[in-house]
Structures are given as structure tokens and as C-alpha cells.
Length: 187
Image (cartoon, rainbow, N blue to C red; front, side, top):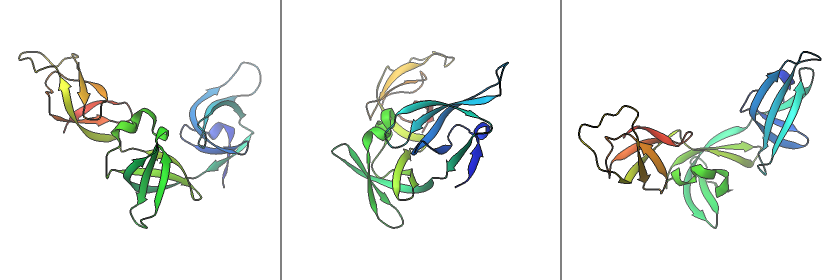
């Protein structure tokens, strides 16, 4: 595995540190008036989700881990475990539903997502950036109302509440950004 210097750590990098696998969530490069520069890195454990703040000097060497990414198709949920199938080998894996956190409602039957593997262990799952949802409840469209910065609340078919522009009506399909959990465009 490649070793990188402490000042080369970027958000999203996966590092092997203290015997565990950690994802760099936030990286701040600090240059104090006294002493050498360092990177203040917020790490999240990929196996148990715990967080850790660590300082890495530029002379420190850390192991950067490359995760293998595979497309997996969502099949069903069983006792808090999400079951996915590899579309090439038809192997099935299970991941805990809390891995997706607040984005879990956007996972739809048959949806293809990217699962990251370290050796044969599934560690992380990423939803597509944009998902199509149906608006099931919102205020009616008001004629003459401008779309300039006036959003109204809407409830989607998966139970998630988002703010939508005034021209979006009930039973319309919209595209939601799963990273920001906000309205993106009409479907």
C-alpha cells in the first residue's frame, strides 16, 4: 500500500491508522507561528463509525488504502440489514441500514449503488447523486406567485420533507440531490 506524507491527506482519503481503517472527513492545514506546519484531520472509522481528531506533521507517513468500488443492486431490507446483489457474479451481501443514515429513505427497490470493499469486506455504500421521487403532499400552485427565493414544504413518497419551488404541484415527479437532500429539478 502506498505511504503518503501527513500534508498530502485530502478529504475522502481512506487511511490505515492505529490498526483501523479511517476515512478523512475534514482536513485543515495549520501553519502556527512557532513550530512546523501540520494537518489537523477529522477521521471517521469505517467499521464502527467512531470519530477521531488527529494531527499529522508533513514528516509523518500514513498508509493510504484504495477501496475497490463495485456496483451492487438493492434487493430488499431484512431485520435492519440491506441486501445487495453483485450484478456480475450474483453474489449477495448484507450491510446495516444505519450505514446510509438519513439518506436511507432514498434507497429504492432495484436501485444500483456503489459499495466500497476493502479486500472482501464491504465498508461503505454510496447512493446515486440524484434520485427521482414523487411529491405526495404540498400546497396548491398559486398563479402569479414568483419563483424568486420562495420555496414551500413538500412531503415525498418516501416520507422525506424537502423545500420545493412554488410551481411544483402534488403528484409531480421531482429529482432530489441525495448529498444535500434538496430539490434539484423537475423529473
